[in-house]
Image (cartoon, rainbow, N blue to C red):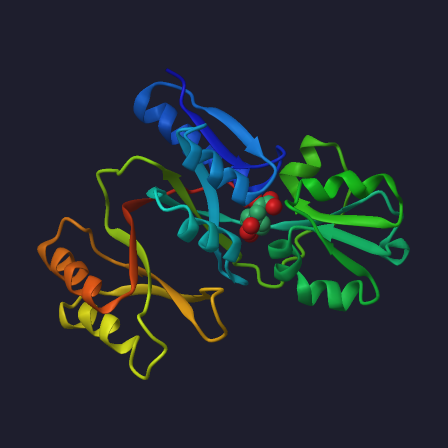
Length: 284
Ligand SMILES: O=C(O)C(=O)C[C@]1(C(=O)O)C=C[C@@H](O)C=C1
């Protein structure tokens, strides 16, 4: 049976590039080529997995310049059953695509908010008076390029795919730009050396976060990331997303999670997974 993988589309997005990396890995390990299914937004990609419309989904989680992809974290928290199967890191190199003669003709630039943010400094320096308009994906931004006063931030791969001219490349503010993606599904997976979880704390009182963090520290379990997101219930009320460098199969992790349950209001464990080591020829 062909496995379907949902990702943010249309074709040409960085999420599609990450999905192609995972599709190659699946083809090599199972002998079957999966089917790629583009969705118009990250939320719809995750919803397709939660509904069981597709077996897998690939979503961006964190960028080295701009930090968390908050849409992904919020949706994963809401969609209870989502489990992480793999992590993968993709180098990101943004280009300015446009049919304009030069930068001076550009009045509007379109892109995904993460891409606009990763190029903020470049935009301020080279296109200071231009209006930046967010789109659902970098590829969606390309539909506005019929006008010769518009530009889009997308990948060199997208420029090639849609035969669009590149005015400047690379334009990300820092050269070492990477985005981490998660491959998610409804199935628990045999695991790896990373575990991701999130929790809300019972009340906004002093030290509410100290205890959960101590539980890991006391067992010598290393935290590789901590991120807060508003619960959206009231101002100052937060959820905490944590990545630890250990597997839920380890006795110390199991006992930490047991204890954590008693110090949190809601605890969600998204699973243990390994990182796919991918060495691309060139950035996407
Ligand atoms: O719009 C795209 O092309 C995406 O794949 C989304 C996305 C993101 O949400 O972070 C993925 C990687 C890059 O960091 C920029 C944008």
